[in-house]
Amino acid sequence: MTSIVILYVVSAQRGWMCRNCGLSLYRHHANKTMLAAWWGVGIIGIPIFLGVDRFRLRRILRLAPPQPTPGVAASLPAPLDPGRPLIQRPGAILSIVLVTVLVLVIGCGALAFGASE
Image (cartoon, rainbow, N blue to C red; front, side, top):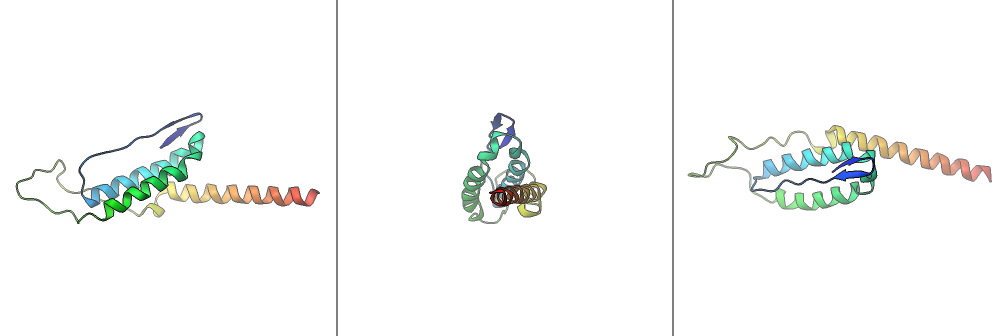
């Protein structure tokens, strides 16, 4: 999901995939969501979209490891590399920082409001 002030764009990729390709695409799209959804109304949907994607990931992880099938020509010469885990990608790091700052701002504001009364 990509958020643009008052609009947001949702995209999906469908097709037959092996476990590595599905995991790679999950990590790519989840990272993109965590990078781009903070900047508008999409912020409301971040937990929903990530939760739905995480639920779909369970099906992907149940697939067998990729292996060549005799007589079947794959569209890619080799499975996609899943790459780094999601928590090590820029989107997750940005999300952790933004949520921490948000919690601190709200917490300090609540303390300041409580102290003024």
